[in-house]
Image 1 (spheres, one colour):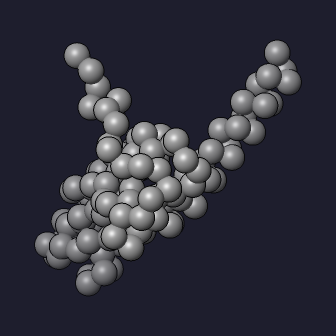
Image 2 (spheres, helix red, strand yellow; image 1 turned 90 degrees about the vertical axis):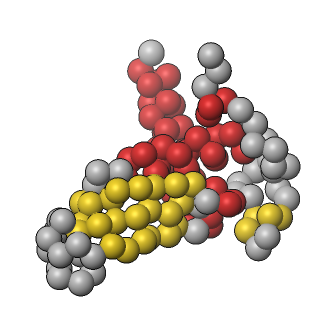
Image 3 (cartoon, one colour; image 1 turned 90 degrees about the horizontal axis):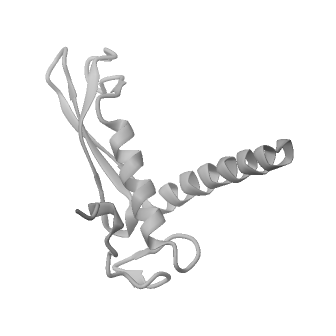
Length: 115
């Protein structure tokens, strides 16, 4: 059975979709999609400070990839019940992707140097 992450997304890299431009270089659409999905999965279950009551019991209950490979997450405070949404633009997600890619390449170079 094929993984749902292995399917192409049908977007031509470097094209404009609405007002969002696909991030980084051509030919990396699947990696960007996977990175955005991993970013969303890592948010699930995390806690942050509630915008209303200030308690640190606001928990991420849902996270999704948006058009252009941005991300949106839904949060609910266990203390007061307040619900709110956080969005990460495709541009900001591209910055996170660049930083993660740089760390990965640096680690790979260090590993090759030690081998």
